[in-house]
Length: 195
Image 1: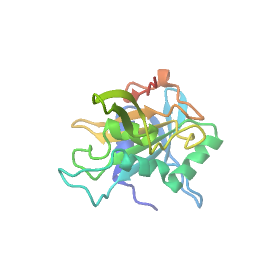
Image 2 (image 1 turned 135 degrees about the horizontal axis):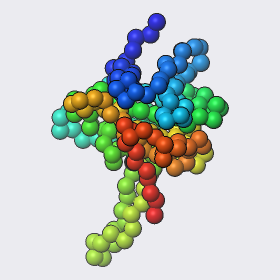
Image 3 (image 1 turned 60 degrees about the vertical axis):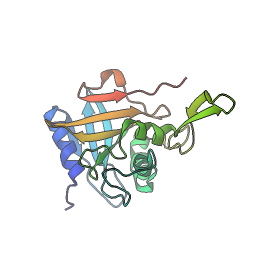
């Protein structure tokens, strides 16, 4: 018998407090995702990961934007777990719980998710007048066409004063897309718009 992680306990509490039907997927020799969840009649695979360590973490520490989220997306085991969902043609969500920071923010803020998924925010500066002439998502992109497209969304599982909450970020390159119009209101959705 495996011991439940803090993130799994919080995720189950989130599902129960929002009356979501969920089932723990039985572990076997091959990597398997954690849960099957029914979101308004749509079955979705959910893998829950938590951030526990960072040698650079301090209350005022600096970090590379998106690094924590990027590591979870690019983890080989996680990608294998999501292939199962992809093979079953089911949407799949990677949820990340920040167990490192009591404020649940260091490395898991909105900019971290966007930078990890689509690339670091980059600007082009005109050196003659110091004006910004262009901006785009730059290097260290973890999601793109034909790369990590088995993720339908990547999101944050976090604890509020009352109950656990979930915020997900759309993977515009997803092979199996979520039906965002039918997701329950307990899930905050951030859909990425590109110019």
